[in-house]
Amino acid sequence: MKPEHSKQSVAPQGGDTGTMPKESRRRLIQGGLAGAPLLLALTSVPALAADCKQPSGFSASGNLSQNGTTACSPKMNGVKFWQDYCNANPAPSGTAVDTMTFSGVFTATSGVTATFRSILTTSAGTLLQKKIVAAWLSAKAGSSLFTTDTVVKMWNDGVVGNAFHPSATMPSVTWTSTQVEQYLDYVLA
Image (tube, rainbow, N blue to C red; front, side, top):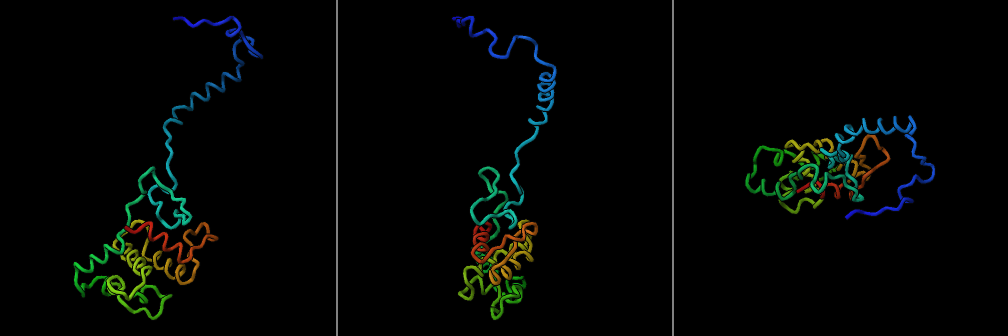
């Protein structure tokens, strides 16, 4: 079946006189086509794709950088992992769980002299203290998300001082204990 077109539909319309395109238009089209392979080679990469869970890439408002539907990095060992570790390795283990005290690491806290094991396994510590200890132990074990120094700053500056700066390039952004806890909930398994 052949489509039928009226002469009017195939006739030049408006400013199109049926003449060859102007040289500038031809160059524009050729230039655009020349760049097509380059544009096809580029892919969209989410911001901070490898480390989007670092404090500088985390938003407590819920605007979390993600690589599609998968998290950018695996979650860190959380409170449950470290509690299970303590139960499987009785004291004294000679590790940071038994040798470190809360106020010895988190210097802005005085009077909390319990060991990390005690914070994790008894009622000696609050839930937030348990989370910060789990984050510190995971960082000590080699987490790629942040260092032990960053965890200490989260506690000392964010929880105690209500002014943790997660990004050096954005000093006006500060976290209180609420944002620190939201971040820990996000990164800890």
